[in-house]
Image (tube, rainbow, N blue to C red; front, side, top):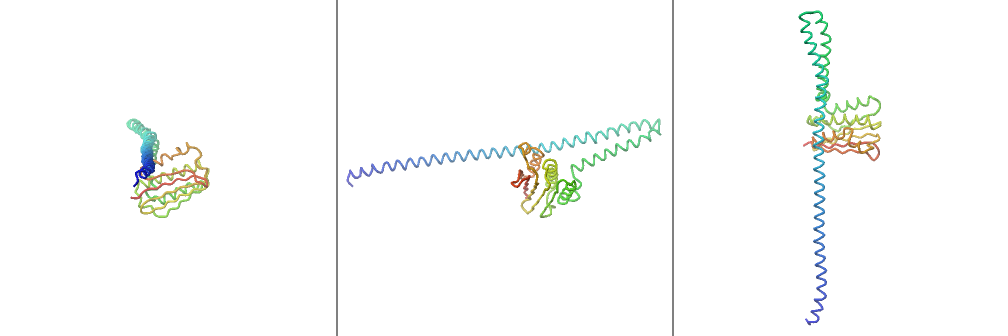
Length: 263
């Protein structure tokens, strides 16, 4: 090849090589930036996930603590008071029995009243811990009975649609769903201004889908999304390793969707 031709060839090739090199450097740089951006996004997602899990754990613990406080308060205020007064009457009877037997006999009806009050408080607290209806009727019939009882008020018509029997659910899941449905009914009656509500439960071998709706005014304020028992529901669902989503429907009204794994 002629030296001058070879020189022209090199002069033409070198800029092309330079351009290719710059393109390669740019591609490497862009790839590095993309990887960094992707890594930052993954870190942000993990941080949000960890934050949400921490909030759910805190909510679960708070729900349990609130229930313990309520039970302790009930035991102290009702059962404890009734037993204390009964004890006072027994001490009085013990003294009167030795000196005034007839007066002691007159004290028995009053003592019986406080013993009956203590028994009533015991049954009520026991039913709150272990609902008798749920124990005797099972979850499916208990949900239907709850809906019928709420509908009897004549304000909202509550409907329950279950595609399968719920006998395979463990007690913890049954109790949580029972409590959650009661809380949803209460929220609808108190806040929604609705006329109709529906609960659908679909069950298969892998999961349970719990879908609640009403045709009311929905959640209007951000503080409502954080209140009216929704945090407590999140805690119960989280304890069952499930997922709760809720909000306003496009056609109007409120919805709550719970998905529980059955494995």
